[in-house]
Image (cartoon, rainbow over all chains, first blue to last red; front, side, top):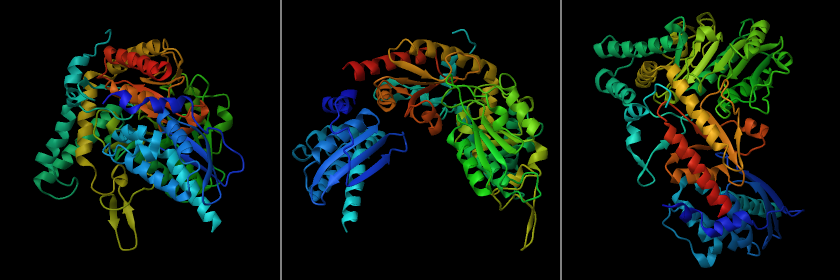
Length: 147
Length: 423
């Protein structure tokens, strides 16, 4: 297992030039999630009308895996329907919890498949999932709010 | 190597160093501040207890029970001698140092009004900003349960205990002061008989109880509880080449005999009726239930092992490794040391940050080179906030580390920095 299989070019690119890393004002829901094992934090603003994910913006501190993952997630899920977005979160989560067996569907997850290698490093799975779980939480809160 | 420590011989006594890491690389273990590796003599002592002498200590009249009791109490005597305690009755076996501190905090909390240990609203509990969570949260909780106020001494930019407001923080209302002997993040040693003697004098002056968290010091340098002059001290076995599942709380006999118990139940009682019970004196009063006997016996073997090599030699050896590490790491662009850079009152823990490289990524890269370090907040979140970092990378050294381990660390950090910053 060499370092390059974990830190793919795509991941380092997103780490150095993260997308949507600036909180957009007046979100539908704001959440703050912490990785208690390492102290990494993310604040995520979600804009949604309850049917479509309009915007995901975030601020946070963390390792390259977590920062790149937030960036990929915020770009991939923008413009998706609520159902599609939740489906992609599940797909991403499954890939990361597969211990490296599931290489991920590139058509669905796009840059997200770069994180397939992370699944072989159990200590880093949480880093890659932090932002995605924050998004899922925000989306569920926004749905609960609507009701 | 200018110390008398024979690293090659010591490494050969620790079975784990014969395995390989991430393919075919030797193990470079620089995470002893989290837990130490174990020599074969310790593992044998534990196994020997189970294979030849296993029975519940202090119970039964059969031969095995006698032998188990003798081995368990023998371990207590070894630890008492190791710490230079006045008597073995001052040594309480717990499952960990965390449990030791909770034991003290809950026992104090159980003291009723009228007891000299009773804590209530208007009293004060003092800790410091460099405490491990294990020596912070039990006191937060005790303060919350009793209404007492929790105060703390700060740390200086250099990573030393701040004394500017010592008399204001440790005031007449202070009932307990709980301080670390060596920071698990900064490496700073708090020498209460040297540079920090005024802290101890102040504690005595106000009549507070003084607990020293010695998890990071006892495994690495000679600690003499009588010379130290504290009231209570704790350390964990697993950081001192001993097994997991055993910790020690030392306390002055006259205090332990008056302190109410924390965990109650079997083997800590004197007399029991359906309505009430009276309790045995220390240490049994604080050891309810069948103890972790094999682990205590393993710890006895561990302290024998450390004494045989000599704690003074171990400390000198670690200081020379620490010096080499600090000097080498400081040459790396963008690297800053979090903690004292000189060797005065310093242990073998070196925390650092590298600009542009998150500790988790650095730790991952080092792991690929076979080097085990700790990354994260080190269970000292307030201290991380104090130095405005989310996390650090920490290398910690012990008797089985060599100069070449330190050189591998320095080279590994430089290589990882290039990978993440210059790629």
